[in-house]
Length: 214
Ligand code: ITT
Image (cartoon, rainbow, N blue to C red; front, side, top):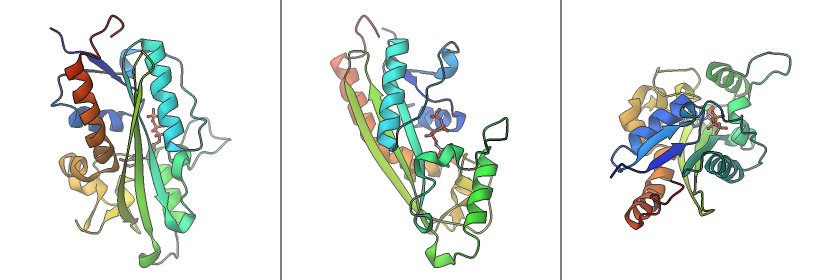
């Protein structure tokens, strides 16, 4: 019997890469939004990671009639009162610019905002909420966090987003230096997904993905 399909409901290729690697040992056929080019853009209007993850998963499950796994994530910086938080992807957005900000625009803005903030006051954490929505309306969520500090300059070329400036004291390296294998052992996404994988395993065993709409 063919493995049941699950849609990874994100347009961020960095997330797809990490999630696909983390899910590789489950008997699932992973699709992504790239397999559904006709789907409309999903607006992110929520004020919490949970609200945005649930909205993305529910909408993609309804539009594709397949189980959908969405990730809403971001960086919370203590010295900035938790910003950029849910607005991490568009932190350096400029209304007059035709294109959304790049990852580099975002981390450069962060380094600039933290100019003069001493090493001991640069604590930050990545947060990830993963939501799984089934076409029958069932919904599951999981959350993961990863703590570190904000470096004073970028280092490394792995990963995506704020990884080059996210310093992991216990590794003496940034998240962009440690590589995918290590990142997938300790990241906010890996921690949220570890919990969600238990749900996915149970649903696969129950045959929940093999109904007429899946
Ligand atoms: P989708 O909504 O299509 O999933 P997105 O990139 O817009 O893609 P989010 O709204 O969840 O996703 O924003 C997440 C942003 O937070 C992301 O663009 C990065 O800037 C940052 N981020 C999240 N996880 C990260 C990680 O593992 N490493 C570095 N930065 C991360």
